[in-house]
Each structure stands twice: as C-alpha cells, then as structure tokens.
Image 1 (cartoon, rainbow, N blue to C red):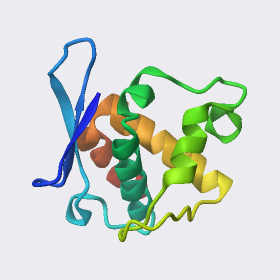
Image 2: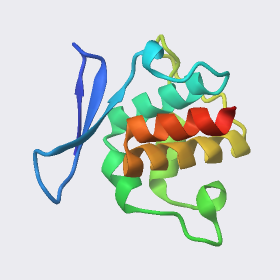
Image 3: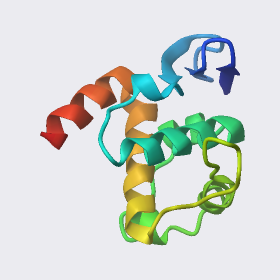
Image 4: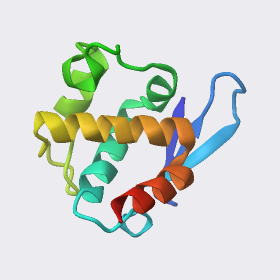
Length: 127
C-alpha cells in the first residue's frame, strides 16, 4: 500500500510483507528530482502512481520478457496512461510509446531500489 502526505509532498511506499514499514519516500516536489528535461514527466508519473496506489504493483510485478512495458496488455498500464496529469491537475499524457515505456521502467526502479538509490543511478547515467 502507498500513502501520500500532502504536508510534506511525499509518497511513503510501504510493503505488505511487513505492514507499516516504510521502505522509501518518493518526493513529489520539483526540487527533489533531477533537473534534466525528462524528470518532470517522471515526477508527474510518480504522482499518478501514488494516486492510483500502484507502487506495490511495480515492486512485485514485472512485464513479460516478450512484451516488456511497451506491449504488455496489463490493465494498470492503461490506468496510468489514462490518468496522467500535469501540475495543475489536468489530464495530460505527453508520452510517445517509447518515453512511456522508459518512464515505466524508471518507476519500477524507484519502487524496487528506492528513490534515493534510483536518483543516484539516474544522475550518474545521465552524465
């Protein structure tokens, strides 16, 4: 289960294995994310995943090898795509198929590795 704290503008990702144990906090504040051109789309997708409470799904499930995220016909993929919002709360999906799949892989990495570790690797790989 994932919970959101609007006061701190973060998402606390918890695990069902140890209920109530926070495994990581995913910030939603712009200042906490990398500063490249793609990070806004990643941050907005993270906010969508929070609203839909899908962090556990990303941590537990992986797409089939023959479809990956691009061609996987899982209902949660359509939920995410159909519910992406801009910073003002307007429905907005700015992604191509490729950028959507890449964003999904980044969300999976955040869910599995934690935001801090993901951010370190993201920045390192961006340079």
